[in-house]
Length: 399
Image 1 (tube, rainbow, N blue to C red):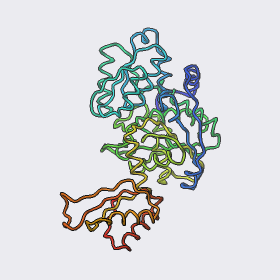
Image 2: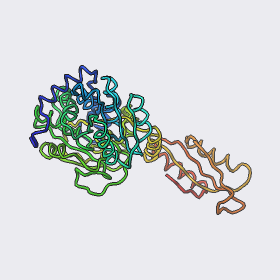
Image 3: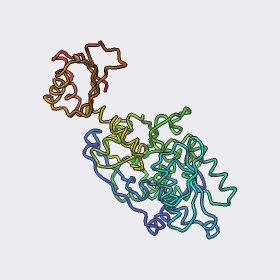
Image 4: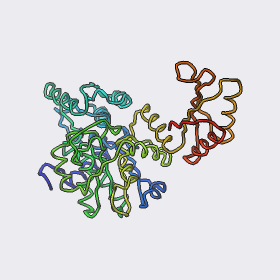
């Protein structure tokens, strides 16, 4: 093992007993015909987005709080989180009668902030990014005497996350590859410790967002919709464990993640956040080598509703399900109805129509029209555009 402080298989097995006592779920695995067909290999989905608090983090949080001494319980706990870890610590602390304060970055989605408060945690918004929230949480723990519960750099937390590895070994005894999102590395480390001890032949591939991928050797960091894995500085312990046990790291773009979110919602009926969809995105993009069966860990489903709406619209547009067109009409009665009749004849559903006369560089005898249409696919979009041009319309497609 990479370090003497790393958890062992026995630690993970002990964690499972605590989790069962703490009413943490064993999450299901689903087969996916859609992703199997698209990737040319059997793809299965480990639905941690259906876990309590909506993410795998509850496993590590429950295990850590279950091991507190009585004095530590009285002093309370402090955590830093981009969202899911904070919710998990708040829930686990409430269930155990322990006070919890969660430090979160200023830009944390309100859905995650509100959920953390609803689970009983006190929330302090502090700093830009996880690292600044982490520094504020450590300072608070030192001042108050509370126990700091790290999101990933803690062997007890890692052991809790490793219970997923035990479940996978039982649920999928023949799976060849496990694809797991990596932020700080706690989830991948726990799964690696458990699964590699039971089935050392299993291939474990980590996935990071292209904009923030320190495990992939990238030193420049930017914004990503997968904020749950946007950790600029991974832990020393997790880096050591994964350095020994991880078989590879790949990256995916936000565009690829957004497409995976849309497909998971539309085809698998699963709501998954950016970080949770990264594993599926990597498989769809062909970044995970091999042709054997692969299980994608859907690490969380706590996506901000506003972001989900934006992603769905964007994803549907890319898939040819929305078409935005701009053209000009003679500014006289009956011209708009002709255009709308053309859309109806092509079986396109009109979502919105906007007229632009004032403030536009449009001749006085014309008006500009921008229409948003609900369509079937890209072939349908092309047919509508062709029909418009055949009728003499000068068309600009905005999708």
